[in-house]
Length: 502
Image 1 (cartoon, rainbow, N blue to C red):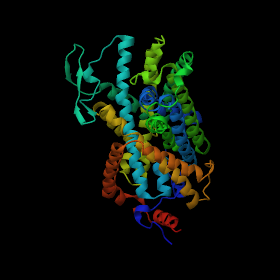
Image 2: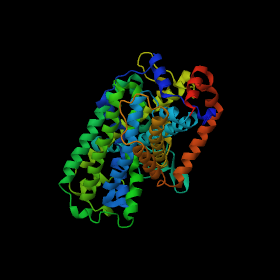
Image 3: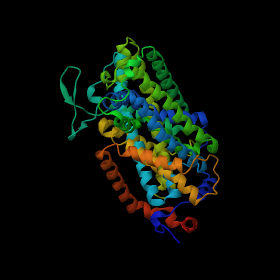
Image 4: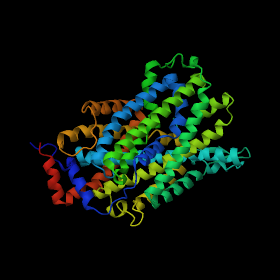
């Protein structure tokens, strides 16, 4: 019996992907070890989600049970991380969830998840670049006494409950004027793009330096704040208004703080020993950030009653309330380091997904599949991503960008969790250096937990995701379906068709 025989569901077998990788000499450099991969994951993950979102969620939704919300979100990530680890070690090529979906669920769903990853990485990077400028301006004012023109720190419009509106800012002389664009967002994005084009080793080294600085700041803050913890502030443990519902909703809202560790899987083609290094990188990054997040939440809610937390700068406000005046500058430096690292990894991962889609013919290969002959990086797509992120960071409102990120990542987690189970059935003999334990339980829980968190993100987020996917379907049926390599290569079609016989 032939199931899913439509060309829309044709699969590109994992063995075929591995054969292409061995036959194609124009591949990315394998220069990343396990520590570099862990650093990439930590760098992509720890950013404004920790420094800003913790106060908002603790005060308005979860209270001290924010600690439990972080753990629940980490469990959902953990199920997905185990599935990512198996897939990345088994199919060590660029593309992440897109590649895994192509091997298990067919071309149409692979395209949908690839298009979804474009949303996740591009919009996430725009969000980071946009937020980076505010902290950069704060550092200039506090350390150097330099005041930038406010018109160069904000996009020309903002986003609120009633949609978009013109953004007016207060100038240094007290008058108001229409904002121009976010200049620091443009400059930091272009600087990161230059580093990314030069090479993966240079990118990983720069990222490691930013990660070490960020972790040092976080550990300093945790250590200093721990001395001021009052256990009475943890009572009641649940939010007085939301109770246990606040724990679940808090896990969904704080999930943005975990976005990024999955980007490690996009670098499987650049890992020195992907069969061993990818599981270490993915799971190691998740463990590190979870410990830091839960510890920070415990210190924050232990120092100050959650109802009194500052939602704009919770850590800095809590530290300064206890007389730790150094905290503001230290936190600013930590945020800048974390955001720079997050921006670098986001812009590093996006071109790898585009590269994988171009190799399959779903995007123009001459542009998106171009690998620099010397640097061995997807340089054309890296430059394009840099320009798009610079434009988005300069002109798009911060609040609008934030709402678009989490739901796309959760969708990718659901697909990868399902892909592991499907591939265990369709290709059980494929070598697996790392096997996700307790399949199908872990895969099922990955689908249920991450899928469940998607439903706590509100109708507006679903509408935006669906609108983005509809645009992607127009691109697929207008270009990608006709140019797919599986349409033009009889040998490949034959190999994939054999997988459809069940």
